Image (cartoon, rainbow, N blue to C red; front, side, top):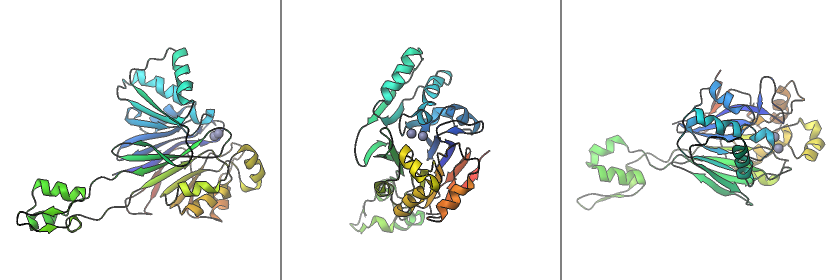
Length: 316
Ligand SMILES: [Zn+2]
Ligand SMILES: [Zn+2]
């Protein structure tokens, strides 16, 4: 079952000729979740074969334009795609007013329910859950209210060991019980521990998204142990003062958070358009943490069930 992240854009502030601003899609068990919607996001969905009607929820980090100006375009586009299923939009307080104002003034035709979940909490809190994924939000430190998101695969059932079905003559109800993690009572009164009948719990895959933020020690606690950490690195480390002033992070600061969190791998993004050459971001970050990968449009990072067997590929 899939667990992957596709980068659709990772420029800071301004879309470029080739790359748009922050936009991603997380795929958990073939269900899609968008994270930030930079301007032009819907064109990238089409380019990478990601079906917009399969997006169940959209997570917005904050209301700066480079993270949200693609959202009104995406929402109004659904009139052409006959969307009927509800869409969850999770973001800082104000997201509802922002979208409703645009939809009202542009007389947008929305024929499905939009369920807004506005965030205004401190610390870590679960903000979304369905049968495939659980998402928690935690505050970042930026110029306006901003949240990071942690995605964790929801895993409900154990897998039964096929050979045990015949060995014990398990019926359907017994199999269901073992899969739920309940011990099974046989007709003769024997109790078979479920652990004897099922495979062990697989690794629960996780991903965290942190943009935009200044370096803050508290973030590592919220993203502890994730398989993949996406962290903004707007500037190289010689611009640490500028980063602090603008409430952004540098390559090295992103790596410090990954190291403190014990992340499986670090994905850097949200690069300032002042830099033409991006390899230096990785070189700087790798002095502190490894492995580091640079985000780019079309990069798909897949996390396998077996920990640390991730795979990255360019899909176009
Ligand atoms: Zn930004
Ligand atoms: Zn921002």
